[in-house]
Image (cartoon, rainbow, N blue to C red):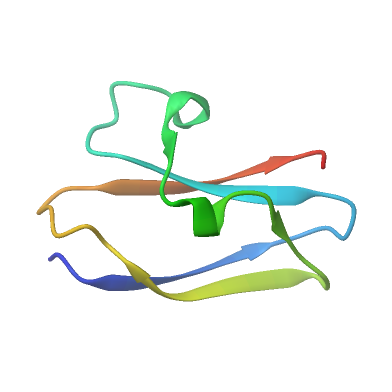
Length: 71
């Protein structure tokens, strides 16, 4: 169902994270678009990180992934 979502993932202090999204799984997540500039280069601390109340876009089918990368 369309709505808002919470995402939690294991994180590392020396990495940043991008929340990406796409409407189907035919393309690998590494090629998906950044969901919103608010969710680009997320800097984390601690062993886990949570994004809360992320707008889901209203589509009936949408996939999300968190991509880890070097800053």
